[in-house]
Image 1 (tube, rainbow, N blue to C red):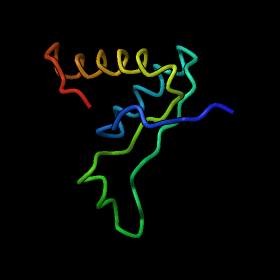
Image 2: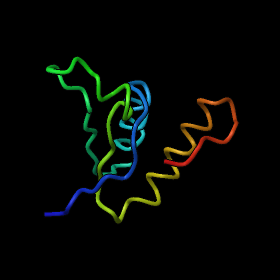
Image 3: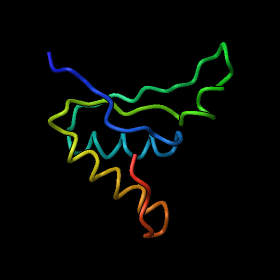
Image 4: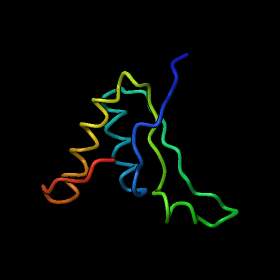
Length: 83
């Protein structure tokens, strides 16, 4: 079984939805893990981001390219900071 590692922090649920859709279209195996914890009512999400994107290391470069493009579009063509 292929090991999934953290590729990037995801900033919000919209970004999670968009990257998830893009990776499914590319047939890239991945999982999105939310940092939301009902016991702390989402406290970690305000400090650490919405959650994380995990996938096999072999797909890291392609995923980061897709994520960079998504973030660039979100900023209207401006460069997004690296995660």
